[in-house]
Length: 190
Image (tube, rainbow, N blue to C red):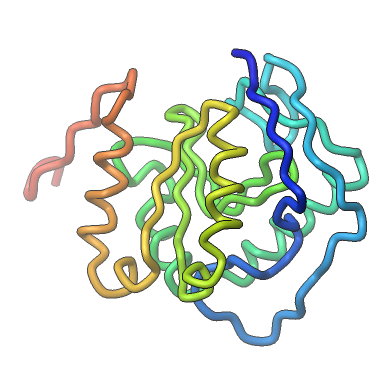
């Protein structure tokens, strides 16, 4: 796949707390002093955190290490909506698909990622209302790798989880090479 080259005057900082959905307590904002743009890399998709991503961006080893550390910290301090959604996605609970949470991709960290489906699930909190342009630029950059997006409002996750999960299911089955896993019926296997 040939990647479309884009020129952004100022790409969103991957280490900024701006854009994280929901609310957190006791977290300081981290800034990135290395304002480097990602560069397309290999077709193999191998490497720590890059499993299943055929096209990825080359970032400096220092930035990559920092992104992994920031992702680990995000996993330790999820927003309420991220924590709720993770409980229904982890251990292949949704349609038998494996999801990773707080997955670094290039110089970005996405909320949830299903590599087999090339699907990113982003949980958008109130802050996303004020940064729609930055979110759109970030999404377009990630989509240039052939990744698909599903955006879910944090209030939907917190107040109507079944509708949020249906939205993800629809995205999983759209253009999916895998048939949906059968759901166990009540009373079976007991």
